[in-house]
Image (tube, rainbow, N blue to C red; front, side, top):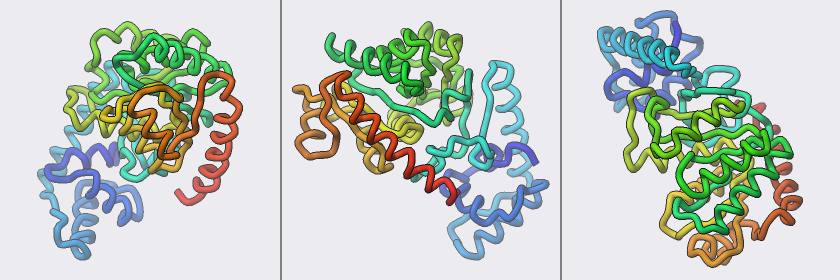
Length: 302
């Protein structure tokens, strides 16, 4: 049976947690709708809160999943789920991992063994723009994929720096890939696709952003990466969500030593490596390599 995870997520009242249970109980890929129901019955025997869907609900969910995949392909959007052998392993290791990804462009940019998130304020200062561009440019020259959120400000300059270095950059969106937010970066998104990069989302086409989706997106940015560089951030910002996810996921967190409330908090509380610019690349790379080695050892567990 194709698109099993997307089918499960299309069943009413079945969320990521229920799908997680399903994967644990599943001995093999279900061959049909009845197999899906049988697995849900097994789960319910251990967890009374699990709802067993009807056969009609499963059939309709399968049809919805097939339609999403078909409509996505018409827009050159591919789908991969957590059961697939090529699902990003760094992402598979995080808590609350996305179970389906939609992507457009060069998938190798996502699964490159060297990945680095570069993020920061949407209202970036001139210095912040310069730092985001320079760090992305230099790490791209070292064959790192640069991960960011395609937002205005620091994200934009990180993507541009990587592209100007002829590197691979990944824009992680908080909406379906048929919806471009912010609209000002539509041209940048097209440039990413045309230049060996990739756009990525855990949401299907037709899905528009809500406030909480930006936070969910942030865990993917850090989860795809060996580490995160915070360019500049206020204490109450999306950048700080990504920084916190980076720490929770035990990845490298580096932060520019500047007078911004978020940066000051991270550095004063010894949560991040203090950096000032390109001269600090060697110590960042050293820590990234340590994380890469540790994650390689963990991959055998998944």
